[in-house]
Image 1 (cartoon, rainbow, N blue to C red):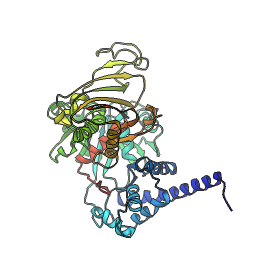
Image 2: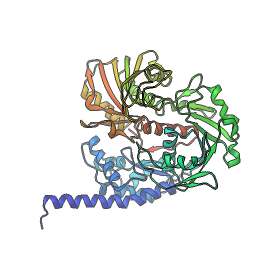
Image 3: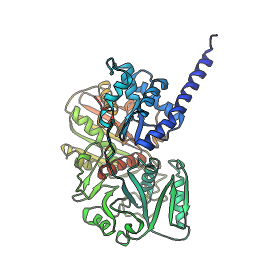
Image 4: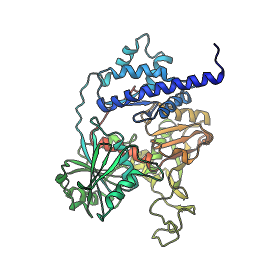
Length: 483
């Protein structure tokens, strides 16, 4: 019997749903039991819905101009689940597509091919020890960091959220902290279960107990009293900026290292993961994860400078309003920031352009920058106007950046979109430092203008997590290796 077009489409959709549903428990067990994070062309599948899994597979066609069906990647996932693997990040999309359509196996069976591609983690023991994490400050970034750690909680997780430190302690404070973690006006509800443990003074989230410590200053905290030792303290307050000021955290018994989620001053390393994270050494006790804007533009600038060379340029940031602006007109010590943030575009300054040089010294003195705060609560854009050492054209430049986004060491930092309809709200929750809007790219000879979107909250937080792993000595390979 010949099926109608509608019946064929419905049957195809049902098949994809069934494969996605069958993938979910395998993906979950791989992560919980072996520490294997499964992705498809960089899109994470851990805790993904069936629709998320289907959509992740649809992105393959955007890059490869050919579909990868779930029935084609499913045998790869099944085979991986039976292998003796150490923790790592495994892209089943790239493995399946290369094996089926790029003749990567060269006559090998699927198992032989996977043994070869995953040799780095095959039959290896996981020697990495878990590290206690304390979030000092529980605002926008602190709560997103908590969400990111909690979605990956379990026996295989090596970053273990043990406590948060906040001011306050009034009656009802604990419930309010839990409520802010549970609900978010921008990023939606927390994906999991959250309850308040009044008796033990903490929050239980997805099987993790998080002690809530009330203190007005780090020297008043003894982490060891809560069973926390050699902790990585993530300072989300922005109160202390240089190594001398941040050293106050070492007055807390049980604190071992400090990560600042803001640009640092003095001799503290400002790290943009993917660009200069290799500079972090075991003896570095204080590190900065730089700013959201610096993280968004530096990977793109590095990619351009590596291929074309950058003579000079200007960075204009169109940035969502932040908590340091006024909701309504009122006194503010900074110029213009006293005017109502939800009602005005506000010209202000940014140190991101000059901060790039801390991660990419070869660009020192070559960039200027400015910023415009706009009436949106999240997702920003950086406009890069650059003069290059080589001439190029729009198609060539976009093609190069697309390959960087997919097959380079910057694949976790740079995303690439060809959509002509994308707007800022579509990027809420993006896990990339920056997303290149290829349809807005302008090129004329040796000059180019690039538009880079970034979720200045969530995308930045994913970069912070990567720096946390580096400081904690938690290093897992991403496979297959880019070629």
